[in-house]
Length: 273
Image (cartoon, rainbow, N blue to C red; front, side, top):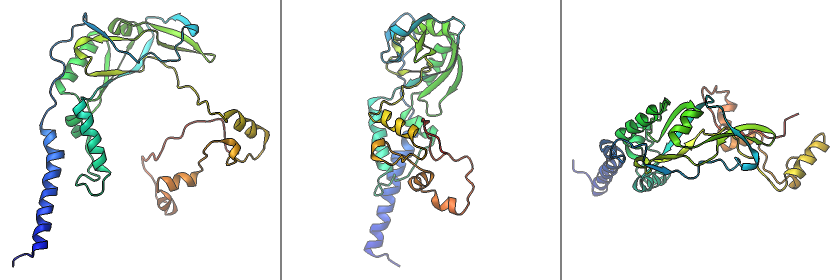
């Protein structure tokens, strides 16, 4: 029996949607990312990598160099995307949130992400070889191939990155941090975005203009009204989180949530009574 014209058009539309998904999701995974590190990294040709010194590591807090044996247990190097990769990723994220797109809620596995937005396997190998040649222990290569985690001593960091690590007395606590910007071999400067874990300084507390007022109100009242305009802050209760993350139906049915983390709450100076 022949199909009607609307049915034929619907079939054609379905085929086009399927092909679109294959072209955008499957095909890129079949094309390996090109190598951006052309050959073995030359440690003598260096480029300064700006933006890695923690702004809290100020000269007035400097307490001198750390011991060479100081262990830095978890350092990660973030790997950059090309301009084309970033544009492709931005476009994909928009389509995944667009209900009219054939890619709506079509999520990628870490390996699919790596093939489209990560660095090449060869570049990963060259970077890990460079780190290991400096005595570092490779802890993990991210499945998305956009980060490498490693550990080592202060001396190894100073030798490999040509920087110095000092102690700093910040807000009454002793911390360590690099004192100068690190350098990396010139051959990998287009791949390395920066380092995390070269200091143990915590982010500065937020300087909200009403923080002093809210703190005083909380200390002078047995039952402070956290919703008062004077506090100048947003307060969330458990039911607010249930509404935001749409978990109220599950809570009411006493569903047990295994290995589920709906959100991460920051610490503050207020505690429930």
